[in-house]
Amino acid sequence: PRILGIESSCDDTAAAVVAGDGSILSEVIRHQHKIHEPSGGIVPGIAAEHHLINMPGVVSQAIEQSGLTIEDIDAIAVTRGPGLPASLSVCINAAKTLAAVTKKPLIGVHHMEAHALTVRMSSSVPFPFVCLLISGGHTMSLLVRDVNDYKLLGSTRDDSVGEAFDKVARMLKIPWLHGRGGGPGPALEQLALKGDPDRYQLPVPMSKRDTGQSLDFSFSGLKTAVAKYIDLGQVSLESEQDCADMAASFQYTAIKHLCSKLSKAIAAAKDVGSSPTALVVSGGVASNQQVRLRIGDTASKYGLLLVCPPPHLCTDNGVMIAWAGIERFRKGLFDPYTIEFRQRWQLEDLKDMYST
Ligand code: ATP
Ligand code: FE
Image (cartoon, rainbow, N blue to C red; front, side):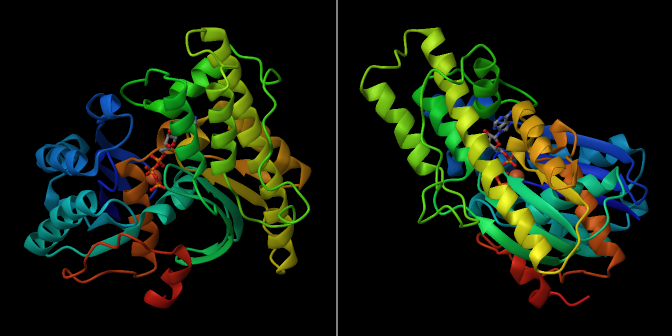
């Protein structure tokens, strides 16, 4: 099939056309980094306003660049949730209307399922696989049994790792990068390249006896520890070296925590009787090179092959929604034109909502 994917769950407006063999026929994305940088984070109302402005152009460009007409497209896939309500309402209404008018099948996609399945577009990763999703709104480890069939292993008890990168970047007043691969997280990664990760000692979250065995993650304590160093004047925001050293120390510790809890999740996945051969890591933070490197070591320790989407497909995009649409199309998982967005939506609930 050839599927149009539409995404606007957070701050990027994106659309793409992807074919069943995994070839990307077109890809259009509009970022809003310049708009949100002054406030230090995404302002939901402003994000939605720009989706409303950008959506018609993004979708029509995606169709045009694919060299197809809407008639040649087999189904329309759209992010149904989770995400910011005002942002989600823009993409879901665009997709529903387009599908209803053209009488094409509609496929409502769980945004995190799309992050999880992207790798299968270009490599033949078989089910089941272990998956670590590390993004702006989520941090979780999963056993992916099939399309639509997920078992949650661990998830964050407070902030996501992406949120922690964003908040620490803000505390250190690091200017955002712009355009593709932009935002606060990539800016922190760049600055950390010039820093010494051993300069500041930060506590590895949930490593004590009471929480050490848990598969869950936690990032708010780490963020607070960084704030304390700044408050005590041990990191001078005037000193680029201090900021780089703290960026490197924070990144080092955050990854250490990810790897430690991931090890436990892999062991747990093997315990429930499944024999995964691959570890898939996706979501915006998976575009970080240090993350990929060190998680790769953890994967190989457990005999798993690490597979990540190319960095630009780790952050939000339309291609991943179109591809998840293809996977769901093949299973016959369609939705009526009356569906609404879901602000909160657990991946584990998919199996009961849709039967294959
Ligand atoms: P979710 O997928 O949970 O709904 P989202 O869609 O907003 O959240 P993504 O686009 O998948 O999130 O990822 C964005 C997050 O990834 C941001 O927090 C961003 O700072 C972080 N991020 C992106 N690139 C990097 C990087 N190179 N290093 C660290 N963090 C990064
Ligand atoms: Fe995302």
